[in-house]
Image (cartoon, rainbow over the protein chains, first blue to last red):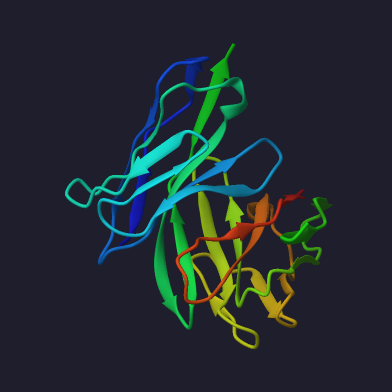
Length: 115
Length: 113
């Protein structure tokens, strides 16, 4: 079935370090891909998305490129800040019919940035 | 602020008790969803409602029921709570026919003792 696999955490980095969180997916067809971020005690917020192969999603300095050939959507940021500390979820969307879509999530990667 | 509102934020139940989690959105979205989040397992879909008047099962529907009261509101009911239902519950909504992803509520942390 359709699934998402993320690199296991937790990930701990120093401020201004380069970040990569790996995400690969298995899907029939061509799903849209998403990264969500969850800050402590809050719900998930959409960070970025890509709807077709070779699309690059970007937001707040984060980027991810939809790679169909490697079925990957790795999240990157060139210089992380303490405020980026959160749990990051990779997800793909499946069409449920009647306009509804199901998001299939990876297990999440906890990121901690130290000053 | 526009978005998805869930109540309550925290709840402790005894095994066998019932309760209803409430969810409302003010973005005029057609589709609404209930997920549960468990450590190391990401989020799993419990039930969804593609549009007002319809509901369907997701991956883990056992022990739950839902009601799409109107376009804005989608409630989740636990008829007889079990410790295995201890989790964080998230409601979400999406505009139909788009690939914009979801807007999530802030969650309900439920503990069943």
